[in-house]
Amino acid sequence: MPRYKLIIEYDGTPFCGWQYQDNGPSVQGALEDAVHAMTGSRVRVNGAGRTDAGVHALGQVAHIDLEKTYRADRVRDALNAHLRPHPIGVLSAEIVPETFEARFSALKRHYIYRISNRRANLALDVNHAWRVARPLDVAKMQDAAQVLIGKHDFTTFRDTECQAKSPEKTLDQLDVVRHGDAVNIITSARSFLHSQVRSMVGSLVWVGHGRWNADDMRKALNARNRAACGPVAPPDGLYLVKVDY
Image 1 (cartoon, rainbow, N blue to C red):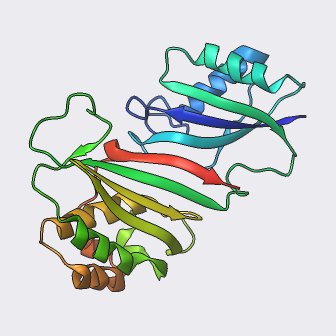
Image 2 (tube, rainbow, N blue to C red; image 1 turned 30 degrees about the horizontal axis):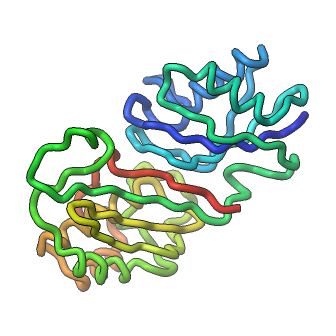
């Protein structure tokens, strides 16, 4: 059975998340319906990251095993045709060795969180950025972000329902960059805990408002206690940018 690697973008707004659930439409479910429409078979679509409800992707990666061999461009185009009108696009498809696993072969995942730091309401970026009306001190946010770099117990920044076996993760990058009213938080790691990025972003916004400083961020991290975390940022601004293999 040939295995295909897919690179996918999607608007997470209408979905309950990547993973199939009984309580609403999922990105995984829409893709599996498209594969069924194309091939007549029910096939599991295995993703690299289980994005939450409302979270978007610019470069989610998945793999599928099909019963017969199709040209890769035909797979891409057929899936896109059957995905309409869902806000999901298959950017590319390629045949890969059967040893490739979208989730377990991944070496690093890259996310960006978009904040619109302005007084005006969002028009074009509704559901696609977090509007923070009060000014943010990006320099202080950047200093506090560096406290979280490296291998740590991230219990403080972990959702209480996280199913990961260990709260320890190694954070490779966490940078805060301003471009006019846009404040982007860029982060990379091999893997993240459930809600880790959004928890870190919410705490960094407290720093940006002067409620916390870098020492407060360090104390929160060392507390290893979910109650020590700042607010959890909404899903609207979070994007899975790409996955390295």
